[in-house]
Image 1 (cartoon, rainbow, N blue to C red):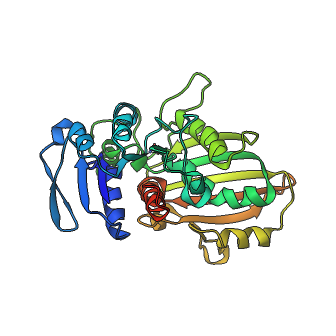
Image 2: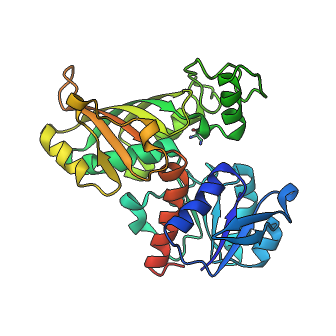
Amino acid sequence: MRIAVVGATGMVGNVMLQVLKERDFTITELIPVASERSVGKEIIYDGKSYTIVSMQNAVDMKPDVALFSAGGGTSLEWAPKFAEVGTTVIDNSSAWRMHPEKKLVVPEINANALSKTDKIIANPNCSTIQMVVALAPLHKKYTIKRLVISTYQSITGTGVKAVRQLASEFVGETADMAYPHQIHKNAIPHCDVFEEDGYTKEELKLVRETRKILGDDSIAITATAVRIPVVGGHSESVNIEFENDFDLKEVKQLLSETDGVTVQDDIENNNYPMPFYSEGKDDVFVGRIRRDLSQENSLNLWIVSDNLRKGAATNTVQIAEYLVDHNLV
Ligand code: 2RA
């Protein structure tokens, strides 16, 4: 398989390369792609050195698959050019997620909708992916009526500049401000940019992408996305109102049998999901599973996952694996 990694020098690009190696993805030719300022530099993959090429050179090389993590503008401009030469693009930006003709894919949920004609495939937002992996089996069994979501998001979701700001603040230094506030002693209710209605793009992604992936626009959803000074992964408190009642033991059993989910819910031993323990792992960790006693047919969950892995790189590679396994590329 001839694979291009577009954004190979970025945080997610680096994790994609790591995951490709970990999962022994069959690569006959690796094409690392980055912005003009990185063209000609070297990256090491599996002990070998590869030279970073330009976007146009990568298109001209006609890779079978291109894994994108290079921002929405780059994806809007270049994904169609790769698709025109027959490359299948799997894009991590928000550029194509809500496009009516583009698939928004979490393999455990809806990869079966993919076909050979899908040449630009959207990878959902990290905070959406980890949530729907846990919610999909519950929606299928009990039908979700409403979601109230609060997220506690890792600073890695903002990018390397914010990670550097956090590290500097912890040692009392000042750094380029990725945020309008100090990070290390704060919970900042501001992930991505604010829209006219007072919600952030991050919060609206949770609303719109969840409905598209679960295939149900009737689900009522509201979200508050908060940035906190951790680096290991995103955490989410999710309140779910179902159309139908449920048995709590059955919910826990259903989650524990779900691919990609690890139930961590042993409060007697203080064993519950936390970013520190999810970092570097691909599963979605679910705990604090309990009935919402204030409302019938309602459940509370605590969901944690490494936002750079299942939230981005691993989900992208899993989509590529599905395409290969089902002869769609
Ligand atoms: C964030 N989900 O965490 C967004 C983009 N990675 O900021």
